[in-house]
Amino acid sequence: MGLIEIAAKKSKDLNSGPPVTIAFLGDSVTQGCFELVKDRNGKIDTVFEQEAAYHQLLKQRLAEIYPSAPITVINAGISGNSAGDGYGRLKRDVLQYSPDLVVVCFGLNDCMKGKQGLKDYEWSLTNIFEELRASAIPVVFMTPNMMNTYIHPSITDVDFREMAQETMDVQNSGILDLYVDKARKTCERFSFPVCDCYRMWKTLAGKGTDITSLLSNHINHPTRNMHHLFAEELFRSIVLENI
Image (cartoon, rainbow, N blue to C red; front, top):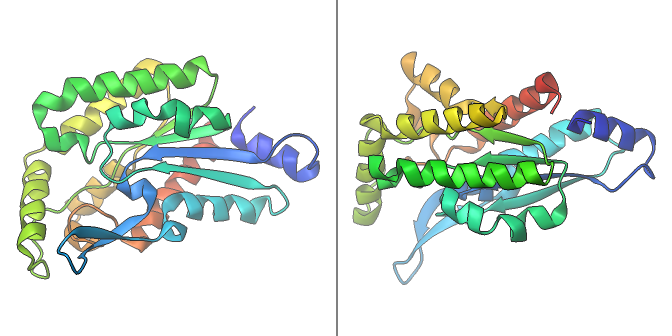
């Protein structure tokens, strides 16, 4: 039974089962990170706004259709995490809740290891997928957003400029493309659906859109508006694929 069917059944009969539960396993974008700031001690910090993250927007979208169905969102996103980190905490942060669906999104931190990190990335995704399949939990892999393609003039802090230089080099050299392609092929082996948001970002870039302006920190965190793109594409994937 797909998520939509579970939500429909729950909305008709609240005693039919536990709340509809969706877990989101990912990095800072999933956690709900936006702008970068520094505290009074010069330590890098992030503006957190979970209610603006794509999973909350998806929850709102589902609630519009099934207003009486309780929907629980498990935000298992942690800033700085790679797919390997996600695999390491899969049981603690996801499996123990027995979700009706798991959305996995990794790549932005993994790709910073360069081409030599591709094998570890594939290994980690494979293990995540195997664990979820063994637990009979439906999976959607959501490809990440693009990172900055130039250093935005508003970034004046030396540390932030260094970060922007590194992510720009990875994006413009095609390394992130390699990671996304590896994720797609891994999903294909498992016959897991892919919500390919990265393809949409690339399409926007191909049409001349300033991708860097669509990043709240002008490095790697999408703006609040762009989180709507994730939410809408996930909604479409869930409905069309009957996941």
